[in-house]
Image (cartoon, rainbow, N blue to C red; front, side, top):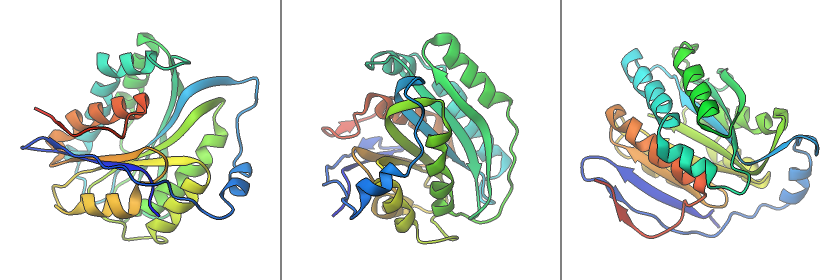
Length: 254
């Protein structure tokens, strides 16, 4: 059985399509979750712990990489994103970011940071803007990115009501173990995986993300037709993730 998930395609037609599916249940999932390191009870509780995994593979040239990066910078400066953060019970989220390419090629670029107001959102935006690209080439291992993301939740000084891995990329998994195995392991730990496929190279990439990458309660994807649409897509995606509104009625984006 597949996880609840939604599909959103953002492009020239701007069509937004969503569908609900049953949550993936994995034998032994509860026991596996108990093995995931968690923050201490005295630490801050936030509405969401969000790991942002950014594609830096060989197909992403510097112009495209910078469009991705600027998209995240602008998103954390967007009033809609801050409004979503402040609308939660704890009025805060925790975020971290790493770049990824091959199976064992990941580089942390932003440590765990809490966003609870405009000043802290600006601090995250500024940190993303200042960080350089650390990886160039090495394949496209989405499974490797998921595997690298899973233990990061236990290294945070925050405890999130929800744990989400946000994967953006412009290619299918072509390295490491099968991405479905990584996805299923993450879901068994109570983690949700959302996706932002960029369709400039592989027009059917959203099918790969929908069927094999995203998973977990409320999972969804937003597909950008190209890197120029990435900025618009990431704002929509962050607002949806933070507000935990991945499932819902169909909608058309202008």
